Each structure stands twice: as C-alpha cells, then as structure tokens.
Amino acid sequence: MDTILVMDFGGQYCHLIARRIRDLGVYSEILPYNVSLEKIKAINPKGIILSGGPNSVYEKGSPQLTEEFYKYVSDEDIPILGICYGHHLIVHQLNGKVESKEHKEYGQTDLIIIEDKGLLEGFNKKETVWMSHGDQVKQLPAGFNVLAKTATCPIAAYINNQKNIFGVQFHPEVVHTPKGNIILKNFVSKYAKANKEWKFEDWIEQTIMGIKERVGTNNRVILGLSGGVDSSVAAALIHRAIGDRLHSIFVNNGMLRKNEANQVQKTFKDKLRYRSFHYVDAEELFLNKLKDIEDPEEKRRIIGHTFIDVFEKKTIELEKEYPDIKFLAQGTIYPDRVETSATSNASAKIKSHHNLTLPDNMSLEVLEPLKDLYKDEVRKIGVKLGLPNEIINRHPFPGPGLAVRIIGSIDKEKLNILRDADEILIEEIRKAGVYESLWQAFCVFLPLKTVGIMGDYRTYEYICAIRAVESLDAMTANFAKLDMDLLERIGTRIINEVKGINRVVYDISNKPPSTIEYE
Ligand code: XMP
Image: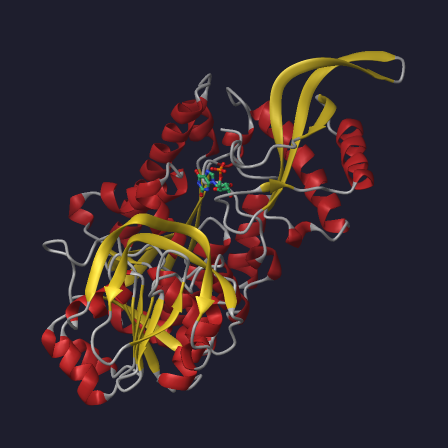
C-alpha cells in the first residue's frame, strides 16, 4: 500500500501528522528517526515527513539523519517534508545555517506567501499558521528557494525543486493552522503521488491478522472490559481475531450507573455472544474499603488498587483453568499515552498500573491494538465492527465512576440517589436529541441539605448538581448552554421522582479553571 512515512523526532504533534495523512485516505506510519535504513526500504515510502521535536539541531547529541538516508531518498527520488525541527534539520545537514532567534515565535502568526504554487497552492497571500520553536533557518543550502516568510522569520517555508525537498517552520498538522491540511495534501498528492489506498477496513483487517499472528493458535488473552468505547472496541477486534480465547473481565465496582452492569453483560454475553465474558461482582468489597473515606485522592487510590487486586485475583483464577493465558490486552488509545506522564488522569494510571503490578510470574505480554488511534477513529472502527450505538457513542465515564461524583464519603444510599437522578438526566438529554452533541452530561451528589417545600410539607434534603459540557478532547471544556425548558424538565423530574433530593443546580463552570469531574 502506498505509504507516507513520518519520522519521529520527539515532537508532541508527531501522531497528529500521521493521523492527518490517514484522514486524506493515504496510509501513514510513524517510526523513530533512527530506524534502520533496511526498515525504511522495506516500507518503500512514497514520501517522508520529518516531524518536529524539542531539540535544536546545532546542539550536541541532537537527533540527526544519516548520510545513507539522504543518499537513499535522493537515489529513489522520495520527496521529503520537514516540519519545524525537521525543517531545520534538512537545512543543517545539507550545509545551510540554522540559528537561535532572539524574537522567538510561539502561537499563531501571519504567514506571507512568496510562492503560492506547488506546496502552498491553495493559500492566499496571507494565512494564519501555528509556530512553536525558538530556532529558525538563517541560510538555505544551494538549490533551495524561499516559499513563505513571517514578520520575524524570513524563511518560514522552502523548496528544493530538483529534489522535492520541502520544509515548513510552522505546524500544518494542528487546527491552529487552519489551512495546514492543504500543505499535507499537496505534499502527499502532488509530490509523493501517493494513492488513497487506506481505509479503516484495511486497518481492521491488518490489525486482526497481526493479533492472530502474535497471539498464535493456542494462547489466550485477558482484557479488562468496562463497556466504555475503548475497551469495547479493543475487545471486538481481539474477539474477531481469536474468538473466545479472549477472556474479558468486567468488574462491578459498585460505582456504576443504573443498570450498567446488566447492560454491559447483555451486550457482550447475549447480543455479541462472547462466551469468555467474566462478570466479577465486587460491589461490597469496594463499598467496604471506601467506607467513611472523604479525601478525593484517597478514594481514587483505593478504587485503583482494589480494582487491580480484584482483576489480578480473577486472572490468577482463570490462569489455573487456562494456563495458555499469555497476553493482557488494554484499550489504551493514543491520548492516554500522552497523558500518562503529563497529567494526573487516573484512567491512564489505572491502565499502566495493570502492567506494572501484575505479579512477575504472570509475565503477560501487553496487547494494545488501539494505541496509535484517536477517540473518533476508535469510534469509527467500533461502528465497522458492528458494536451497538449505545457503546460507540457513550459519554466517557471515569474509572472511579460515581465515586468522583459524590462529594466526600460514599454509601449505597447516596449512590442510589445519584443513579436515579442521573438516569432521568440522561433520559431527558437523549429525548431532547442533544446527547451526542455533548462530551459528557451527568449528575453530581452534593452532600449538603437545604430546605424545600413539597405539598404542605417542609423538606430538608440533598442537592443534585447537573454538569453538561462540550469539548473536543476533555483538555478544555465549556459548560453546555442547554435549553432552559430542558433544564426545567430535568430539574422538576429529579425533584419529583428522586427521593432524597429537593434542589437541583446547574454548573456553569468551564475547564479550566474547573475540571469536568468534581473530584
Ligand atoms: P477532568 O475531571 O480531569 O476530566 O476534567 C477529564 C476527562 O477525563 C475523565 N476522567 C477519567 N477517566 N479515569 C478515567 O478513565 C479517571 O480516573 C478519570 N478522571 C476523569 C473525565 O470523565 C473527563 O472526560
């Protein structure tokens, strides 16, 4: 298949480049910058993109390409596009000059186009682009021409016509460069002449083949299945590959939404007929461990550790019956990997904890078929694999579940109140047709009692907060400006139908500075 190779120099947007190319219908693969030439030759790329990266090319030890690499691409006439660090590297290694600038350009800036044909065809004379590096090209090597500049960067894009080598100082792959896709498209279609041969169906087929090969004909795989989209799609792929040698473990931690445990079982056991679906009811264990615990981090810690304990115990039990369990599968997606070290997102921690804490003698190999994909790509694959809509389009739900939506200590009574309120909220949001336009909508239990009146009686009950947000990636979020009549319907129903709540409030905070979840 025609492939565009992205060489990774450590840039934070490297995966996004590959993703954008895939969006153009062309297959793209990422390899580290120092991959062997043999491997590159085996891929036989139609074009190569050098990613950005945090280094400066003139620093000692900064990542560089070999002479053989340049010879190979020149001999084979393979077009190259350098982005940011890649843009500097080409110049630096082909005898031009790169320097650190006093006036560094970060953020959006105006790009002034000098040559609007070829790579920049489709650009107006002035376009907004996203800059994120302190270095810039001072002098181009022989045979190179300037394509565009900014107020403080005289060589913001270049071309070597003869060799089809290009560089851009800015990031065409990010949304902050609104017309960035045009550059990638021009590179891929005009210069690399790569055919649009990539389809999700191919990816699915290849991945299933890959899983089959890796797992072999006898080995088995275990997977923690939460019923969320990522673990469900991972399960569906693996199940296609090895059938019931996939053992899915679903842990009911007592912090699930109303009927959730039943629904997940129904979907996977009854509808999809996963015969190795293992339901573990650990509700009482979790509730006991969480009794009287008020601190949010402590709650998260207990839930994380207890989950791992329960999961391990079940795995050991299964291992006795099926000694061929050799793999631990996870629904890790690309943003999880980015966030693992960068944020305190407990989901990422929980996922990595599985690998870290499983007993040594178990030594399971990790299988993460979705690790290079973004959420919306995972959803598309889920649709193609025939997963039901209620799984594909489900709002994200945190690992610690309702525990982080009850402020302070947790007990069954509070959980049930919250479950009832949440069910009404989701029902009304769905009825109003806005469920899929929201990133998340949920109720929060505030352990504060206020006075109300119902009929002739004074009430003294808890508060329910409604949180509904719009977001693209959960890194930032805005509270949803829900229709007032809808909010009124939700509030009225919750107060009338849920015993224990006499007041409903709507959360109007954005992230940042607030977070989406409450704890
Ligand atoms: P915050 O509250 O940090 O949430 O704005 C951002 C997104 O992450 C989800 N979230 C979690 N997901 N385990 C998860 O799997 C967790 O511990 C966790 N905490 C927050 C949250 O629902 C939102 O979508």
